[in-house]
Image (cartoon, rainbow, N blue to C red; front, top):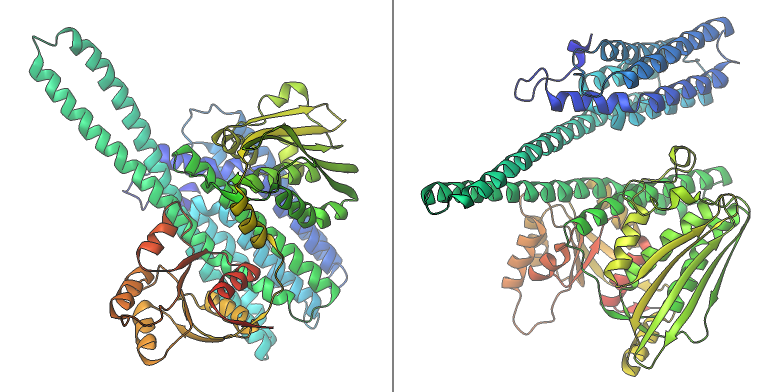
Length: 628
């Protein structure tokens, strides 16, 4: 069975550590994926029990229950076998793959036989459950992409057939969408599996390289004892080490390129998702639709937060994270966060308040973005782990002088608390208090590790005081220079609230992604702007030659001619002495150095995707004349 679903396209290998690791990724999530499929089975049962013959539906549910039980038993068997045992020959793998395939078969039978004619609501429920089952399995089954292809095609093809069978334009369109959706999922799974294979292959190559370097080091120590007699042998060893270093540097560059590409590929569709949801919020929706949009937007932002955490962690590990040193108001940062998170706390009936020391200077010098990141992590964790009571933010000046101030930031909650023996592991990477915390509250375990690194980079201290069941106090102490009088005046001006106004002007939007074209165009036209589109740099240059625009929003990665090349070409052709045309990068490239790369190409500003409407309005408004 496993030989039918394992993918051997990579270098013709039917076994080995990479293949074992891909199988392990699937089986490691066996409990959660099996439970999710079973929960959805119950959801389908409850939704259709009034419109489908109950005996047939009950029989199907009993079969799914049996499959669920056997899948759990097989996963348990997998966890008990030795970790160093090869998985390609394991009977657990064969059984689990067969059960997943059988699960897909029963989903296909459910879609085919339980699709109730005339019951539109139940039909749409089946469509959404089928789409959810298929999309949710991407991160779980994509390491075995052939198995994933079977798993999604078994329900989606019958679903498309049933939709076509109903007749009518609407069902025809929905059936076509389901087939297109299937192709998108297949493409996504293929890309993810290829990325996983490349990453795993690079990891094992790096392990082998480290072992090789260790052996070379030991050999070098012995050669030092025979340096005079064996000088030629020492030189040969040095040449090998240089080659090994070059290989290591190439591997590091490959990792950086992988992270940059993954960030770009994830941020591009995330921009379409978040932007579309923002546009939907501005339309006329009923209460249920508003709730659905809020849930979807919150989930998308959670995914983006995880992506940003991973990128920050990578930057810190590579020593590429650079802190800013600009004037900012700590008081404003705290008050804005309390206002921003108030609704989240109110939804849990948790009181959120702030206590700020009156001696705190108005404007400090530091990195407001990273200070906000530290506070946001502390506050969101406090709200998440508090079921009742309050979350209090306290800003205290430990020492204040004319030029410097030491500030202690405390976030106190009345939540679940943390056992003393678990506190020492809180600030480690991928760590939470225990497994049940992850299952109940979610999270990657990276947030506090990143916060600790940020606080240490800012020269501060960090800690936690907690008692199980009685709440926690997370704190950090930071030392800031006090901004000069002139800097304070400028910072206070920037912090003044500005009313969102109607913008005037004609903008050229250069973007190759159709979804992002639609989202950005809707946002910009909603601000009162006129928008022209160009799908690559070559067409943008042609449009700029025919018409005078007030501003250009330029994507960077495009076919035919990218944004960097197009900007350089336009700057070379721009008439001397004429008003400089503002060109703003609006791109999914969000790694360290991308902003500087845009500015060096001749762009005037930079906005990373996903783009929020408020930030887009603010940035465009800085470059255009506005009217009330």
